[in-house]
Image (tube, rainbow, N blue to C red; front, side):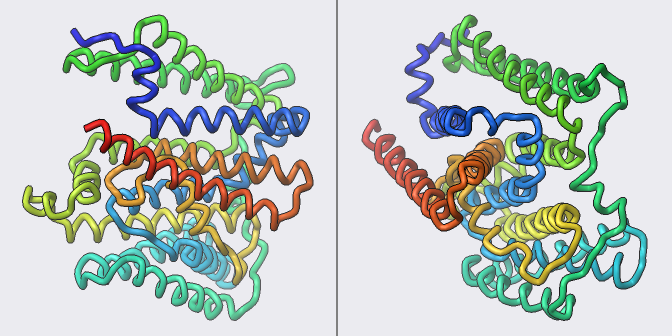
Length: 393
């Protein structure tokens, strides 16, 4: 039987992850107060999901790249290129919308193969390869689009980012189906937390007391249901939110439960030790960049679908938002530490700050200053946390 840890002990032991959740709750509460509740209005919450879904998708792949000890500066250009390819196939060539989706995904995979080859096989630092990729893929975007925007996409393509599941189970003034999905998510979270607690007890690891555990799952379940209630009173369940939830579940499983995921953490923690223990670092690095290219293509499809056009300047600064989301979400600057869920929370912090400041009418230049300060503070917290951990040894 494992020991029952005190709340303060659990908080300080997992300070990197617990701190980000506390910061998220504080920022949401702050902007809710400053905006007189408009931040959490049903319509604004729906727009928040739609506007930042592609950044969150990029953050999933970026945190895996950072955990392995790399960086990818080209994802914004890949978003633009894949959206441009989808536009040329569906709008200029008149092919079905799903052919455009497949063409964009294939383009993202080829981009990943190109960058993975130079990083994993040749051994050029990812910073240089992806910096070159940022220029190459932006230039290819201009050539593909002939420096012009292409629009509109077919209606089915627009539904990827702008569609909703609403009315499947009816409901008097609200969508029952959205509430059912919220309930399933709350039950899934509770079961997962219970199983995690049981495994820790099995391996004699300290856990929180039963009252504290119940308080945690009830609080999170209440937040999930409140979020679902807001969506149910707006336009229902966004299709892009289903896509995002599926990606979070899949990549959360891959990074935490598979050999490939453990290899990524091993490489980021100590590359030499990982090689000596038999990790095929060339293959893992190559697959990481192919995966990043595919996720950038998914983000490109979502972005072009939402904007209903492919633009030469699409995706500008997306790489910085994705990197910021990963670091704010607890990824270590030296690699080896970081989670998909943390990156999503980091991305949501950036989204809430941007959205809240926009509601308050704060100009874009000030918003950039605030976001930059938050990023520096997040990295400073990581450095301080690492020194604190070393001092305790």
